[in-house]
Image (cartoon, rainbow, N blue to C red; front, side, top):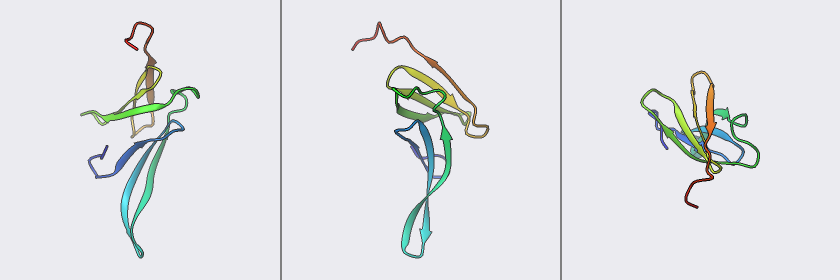
Length: 91
């Protein structure tokens, strides 16, 4: 998604959240990694991020393929998460 500064907030395949800005360079438009947030403590190696969404309080909510749900405070780096029991889900 795009944040309030028109930067892309991206979930990576290695459990990181990247904040990427478009910049102007001598050769034209370029992209610059502005921030990197490590969620590996909340996302096990056999799981992966599948969605990111902002909320009104400035937190970034994330969801993982294996039922993890959590928030990232981009100001402090604090991550809170839980793993939902998917055994009863419709698969």
